[in-house]
Image (tube, rainbow, N blue to C red; front, side):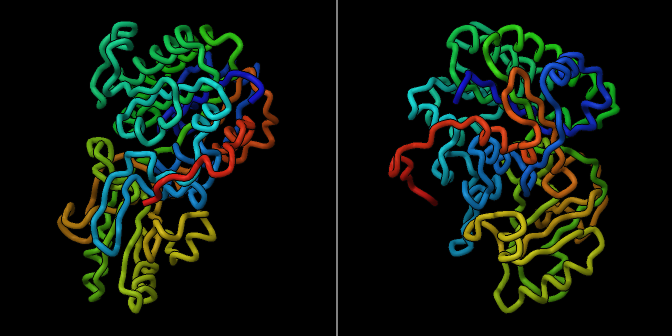
Length: 378
């Protein structure tokens, strides 16, 4: 890694939000550096894409295909909130093994233990240490716009206090879930983030800054219960929403992608039913999903389903029938895969940036020695 780096992930920053707001800092970053539109990986959910950004790998390599891990043998599941699930080292781990000082700042507590291995400084805005509170103040609720402002002020404090070689900072997408790009609330939020970003840049002389998002965001008006849908055709199924996490106020665990576990002899029949259903945009068997989206075969369902732009998939029993109207903003599918990418003081050829994960690939962080990344893989 040739120079000190800040990698900032603004959670849920669909390009439409940037277009609707006044962003003088990002405009100046574009003029002095670069801006391009890139791709997130599918499913377009937090864990999958934060892992991709920070490892520089696709899910097939790093092993994260969801926010939630499900074992079809025991029929038990767990939230993915520890680094044990990762099959590749993050850039923070690799930097640490190379003798560099790395830092992780995340808004959501769930990402702290998932991504923080190897970081010399690591904390969440949801539960910050006393030292950070003393320097920056008490953070607001995780379900607020203000917690992101605290996060960027904390980033500035970390840069000035600890002078790390590599920093990964991730915000939360609460505002984007609650408000559309043209709303006064969203415009105010993006403009405030832009102003605070300017303060971070002032405090980061000598750093290159790379900025992206983990996924986009879209308005949803229809929910489908895939289990109830298939049950009406006599097909039993288990549904796992990749978006499923503890932060249900954001999205009610309804997203634009889903994994279905089925009896082997019913897979083709189920796929046929799903393909004929309005609101379902695409249906892939396990092998097709692995090949097309570079997903890990042992951590996805027998069928991978993607929703239409206005549709989400609901957990069984959360809507009154197999289809119901809803009003929420969410992500997870193909329609939230477009993300912005900026570089400031960066030495990266913009033409190399097709995916947001290409940012870490471009850093040339040293790989760990053979055998040093052995770990338990669930």
